[in-house]
Length: 336
Image 1 (spheres, rainbow, N blue to C red):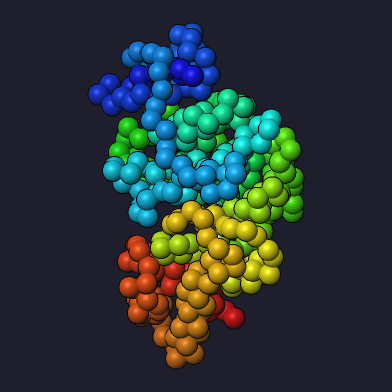
Image 2: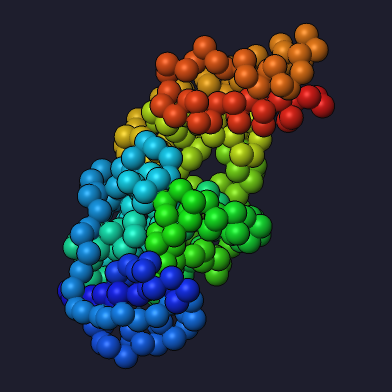
């Protein structure tokens, strides 16, 4: 199906322009209405067309996942550095996470439309980090109900300005054109079922672990469990919540059966519970070494550089995140 593609420019910077896909009918009036609601933009033109779909793999019947780059945000990947995807039922589609920019989300939308014309009923956001949520506007415009952990909305509001500034700095000012955060319309506190038509998804909100708003998605039809950033593969885990809470949660989840799990980063289909091992081992190592450092009276300035350092060869992006993790863990444990 042809979609509406608009060329829009920043009103304050006419040299900064981008093509944006607007989900739905290719009608000129829709372009004018969309731009009118965004005074920071001007409309340079429109056409009927499409965008290149993200490459996705069907890891189980009706479950499609795109593997993002194991990288940090930059002008090359434009926010395509997290695993995102969708699940198709007989009546509707649920999209899980959006990528780090509108550009990535448009490719994900195109991948959905390449496989089905069913309505996109839900956009499920697994947690607050920008590489998973910054493309939400595309699916909001497509009519999806945006849903997340009960604490997701406040977390996104608190970090919105920081996320937008980081996108501008790291991906370039054009990357944010037509994008922005979308807050959840519905919240999960405990468990919630979504019916896609003969296909139930169980959404579960968890205590503080990777973040304070981690949400998982279990597909009852195939036993596929979307754990997102509760599990990392290749990419070094990132601690933004509670390291002790994260370890406890992984131990509890490992007792539950699943046919496969989808991590937030790395190879998109992992065996369970074996997939929990590397992440848990890394976190446990940080805890053990930090407790040793505290017992010796080692200050944060020393421990932050030393804790976990000999694990550098086991993970990608180690130098981007390990010192930050060590600092976060030290601050959590120093008052035990």
